[in-house]
Amino acid sequence: MSSNDKAQHPSTGDQVTLQAGDRSVSLPLLRPTIGADCVDISRLPKETGLFTYDAGYTATASCKSAITYIDGDNGVLLYRGYPIEQLAQNSSFLEVSYLLMNGELPTPSEFAAFDDEVTHHTMMHESLKNFLGGFRHDAHPMAMLCSSVASLSAFYHDTLDLNDPEQRRLAAIRLIAKVPTLAAAAYRYSVGWPIRYPRNNLDYVDRFLHMMFEVPSEPLELNPVVRKALDLLFILHADHEQNASTSTVRMVGSTGANPYACVAAGIAALWGPAHGGANEAVLKQLAEIGDAKHVDKALARAKDKDDNFRLMGFGHRVYKNFDPRAKIIREMTHEVLGELGIDDPMLEVAMRLEEAALKDDYFVQRKLYPNVDFYSGIIYKALKIPTEMFTVMFAIGRTAGWVSHWLEQQTDPEFKIGRPRQIYTGADTRDYVARDKR
Image (cartoon, one colour):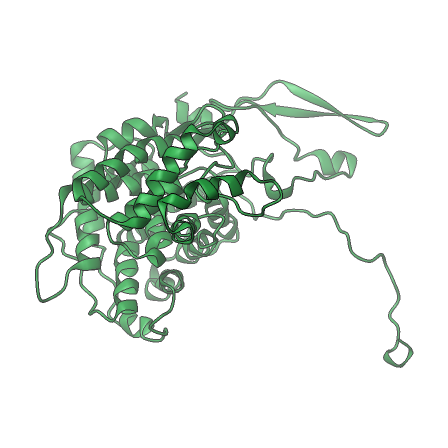
């Protein structure tokens, strides 16, 4: 059995015993390929009448997946078994997209076919221009992206048979291909520029940057470090296990909804400042600090338990060590700033904040290291990508993970509609009182 097979079908055999009142219940113990064992509680309600409570599902596995593995204690992130460090150094975002979707790295011929297919699905329907025209000029790009992606189901309604593997695969290809086009169109609409069509003679990242920034009056000259940095960011954002947006895609997918609606729901979840909007929040906080000379004061406020102020972009809910993505992107951040020679007071604040926090015992002891949101915001700022587009950039990369999880879910033999339980805290049963007697 391959490692992927093991991941999809964790071994069983051992059991744990739960004492529920005067009853003793044996529950199966599932052993994944790597990672913590998991108690299968699916029989618990039937045998005991009891449910479990887990706010935020932080201790509950919602599915079996062979796509991504995280070890937060040791700072490990694997895509299909490959360490993120190796993929960041050797791969490209489009190759990583193929890997996440298909489970294996492509051969040269497989990658050429995949690249060609993605390239020739980048165009958006012309009527989507009218769709974007319905938004105010100052609408947030995430609002336009979310709505535009959801609308794709209206354009491809004749290929939404979820029982057809080829139609499912084609939908995934379309999403990876078209989300950058829709994202760039949303940005250009917001600044009043004419929408640029994708140039199929360019690779994935270059094509997106041209759609974003090229104007008819002059050609766009790209610095290679810009292309390299953006491709790296897309790789690092491509997937992150069962985070809020991916879980949302799976939850909506469990209803049998079409893939465009599922990914649109994921985009909506990503928009939250506690999730994909965190890198945008980092830049806003840097602007509030204002000057590098105020960094020490900001650190003091962050350490004051009576002050509600906290540093955005430090620490991570899953990683209790240094976020492996942050280690990679930190090097790229300094390379970008050095190569582009940018003189920006806000970036000076960021670098001073990073330096101070990494030397401060309070942050080091609590392992509150700068995370991927901290560095990605700085890079986007250096690349002249507007702050309101930061979460959109995250969505472009994460689309590869979303469609991969959606595809995996469709072939899961244990696939069922999501239906969390609750602990009811409302009023007990009571009788209706007539309005004139209340």
